[in-house]
Image (tube, rainbow, N blue to C red; front, top):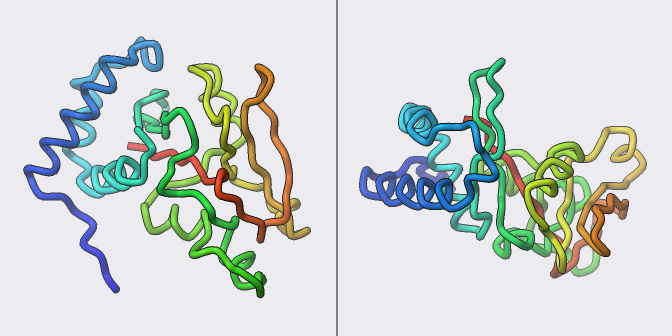
Length: 187
């Protein structure tokens, strides 16, 4: 099934207004970034707007958290307090999903991210996000896993407990109702 990966002009208008309001309410996440510059980049990237809408639809509450001036990109990240509800109960990737014989989940974090046009957060990005607030106090999020761990059938995830950020490991085929994934989008 092929999905149309574009938004109508009305959907774009609504999404931009929502993102602008979130941006203005959370200035601490992007003190030196001007919304008009972000908006101009978004308007010139309709496929990125579609991905941001998917982040929003699944409960991610995306917001700008960084400005990569070297690459001329803004980084949008899921800023929902807990891992997005619409992206939970997923194993790590397709290989893990296919290896699970009993009670497989509906999908994998990597496959959903690819469908959405986004990437899972890295360990570094997750730590940076946690400097902007307290996230995943009751849930956890799969992270982009280094190849050497994945080759051993593992994957990594993170959360915040006891006032600190923890990075853990688990079998990539595992899935839990309270584990999902946070993602990022470069615009």
